[in-house]
Image (cartoon, rainbow, N blue to C red):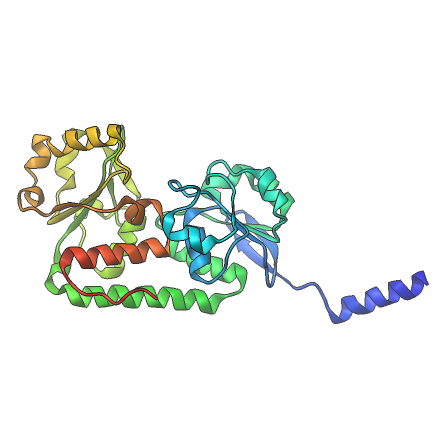
Length: 303
């Protein structure tokens, strides 16, 4: 009887071999299932990517703000379980979900990679932020839905192109990007999430904001480096008192008030969720929506 069972198992193994592919990623090479069905995603931008490609994870990193997920993602996530923040993944909860694939990023989870790999096959992007669009393609490849990923990027690029045409000459304005938060005011370069989106549209950027560094932290003496034909700035959307006080302090500084864009009424606050925190493709489309509103042009709704 045992010989019969063994022979049957061997026969099934021949006709139905385990389907897996080798994926090279930031932490090495990993065999992942061809059609993963229980995926855990450990970054906010990755959550946006998976949902946009029609994949609902069983578990996802908690949004930086939200309870536990951003409002624009909560309904799409359905019963997905919060796994803690990107920098504090709850391994016990993750393991209880019995994922067949984990997707993370070396930037956030390098130190727990071995523990993650002990739970399920784990692949990692090198970083997040400026790499978000490349990561979108990478996630599609890992899951085996390259066509969906290519279509999602093509649609975003087409929408950005439409916005460029609608804005017209305004596209030549040099756009400066600034974030105000208590204790850390930053100027963002073209190598940042919002910088990549602005580049997709085709906006000019100040020479000082063309940099391999995502951002530079500054003190008030460096406010003149914020100059541009137009300044978009963001701060915590919930407006806690410490943030409001800090924002008021910076926006009333003589150096800020002396910037040409400020004097021309072209310094405008934008939504931090879309321009900074979300970091993924839904946020990119929300950025395009807000830019269309600012420039007073029409833009077809994102699909």
